[in-house]
Image 1: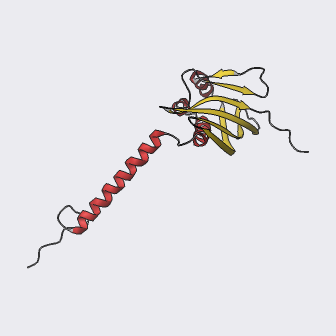
Image 2: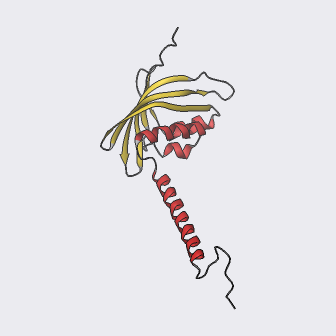
Image 3: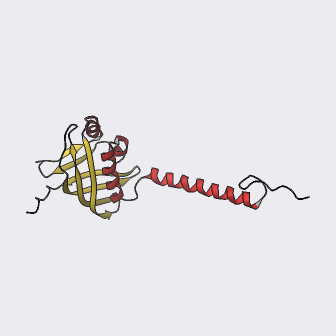
Length: 167
């Protein structure tokens, strides 16, 4: 009389059950490593830039503040006479206001200089008032990032005046 075979994937001494458990363990390890990689943050400043604008568009304050130093960063736009400081409180106020933030980035380039990186590109989108709309603009930008123990931190943004539409 032969012994009954355990069902596939069951624990026991069968080679098939061991292989199934091995695959499960490998899957769990892969998921854990993927989670650790995500928790570590973007690998470079270009990825941090894309993630920052994505989190801004989602109204994700915790996600945005992971990129801000405690004192915030400076921003100079085409209409400003001087740089202004933008910190977590500024983003909290923006998100609380109900304004609709919709940004994406295009044509990004990165120049790494050790623990500092310069990212250039074009920001596409707008911030619309809560009950209104705003026309999307294509705004060239330059960002200065610094990598420290907490990942990439935004130090400065320069927004150029959008080019006039072609006639």
